[in-house]
Image 1 (cartoon, one colour):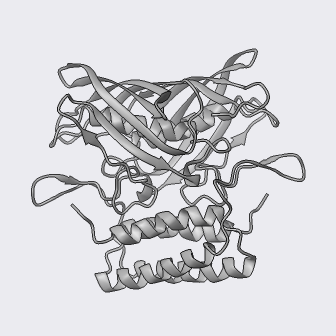
Image 2 (cartoon, chains in turn yellow, cyan):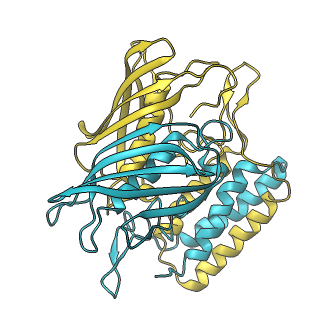
Image 3 (cartoon, chains in turn blue, purple):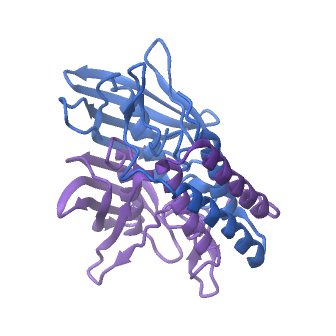
Length: 193
Length: 193
């Protein structure tokens, strides 16, 4: 489902990167700030209370438009596009730029864990029953450079509402981070995590 | 060290939230988008190549202004302010809003791991030698609501370049996520992670 806000969100993603990387002088910073303040005033004319949440689409699917990793309205989200093949492999190809930096030139280790948490969890999701994280273990094999990355996750085995999943982040074919975790599909009316 | 870009970054943080939560019509979205595009054009007049990196301040400290969690120029960063007490406890009090959502009304489990990775790692940092994550284990005790949270981390023991750390996220005094990890101070010229 395409959200009409998506083009604006994409521009704000570019803005986040530009604020980090700009080298214009303080007068130009002030001029840019005035435009950001104007945009903020317009969007603020009518704000929903709280957060976007997860909404049901007409076709019965879910629209987590505010989600920090996949939300079409969330400029923090790269966004991640999660693919599933017939064998059950869940994967994403994503480019992480300056806004995801931890050590110089490298992806913050915690951003790797954020992506792996989401991807391993996706192996356990069912259309009407998102899974929440029970445990997650990460092993950092080597630093993850900023740039084009691939992440993969798969189910090791399932036991009732529990899914035991594994996954990894790859850069140029080399594994940088390995993960394993247990994800649980809650009973009704319990929020996923 | 205060970065002159900080007020602009703060407004972009508010903008990220407003894009998610706005309910103005498509004409107003377009008007806001025009301002964002104008700000983007100004900041883009002079961009540094690559990422901000970690720069050395005049007093010999480090200025990770682009850091995804603590960077003064990074609008993705809440930002996290890391405090250390005399007993070695590292902690942060942070409010996470709509932009950090995973399950409806709750912080994405991966955002909790991102914060804990950073905080546990901070227990191992030395002024001239940042630590990188070796392993990180997370246990999700209960869902973490959006809003005011506290995170704490401490050293369990050290073994040469290795620091064994533990930590947790608390909401209203209740632990939502527990973490333990091994953080390693690299030899010179090895990037931290």
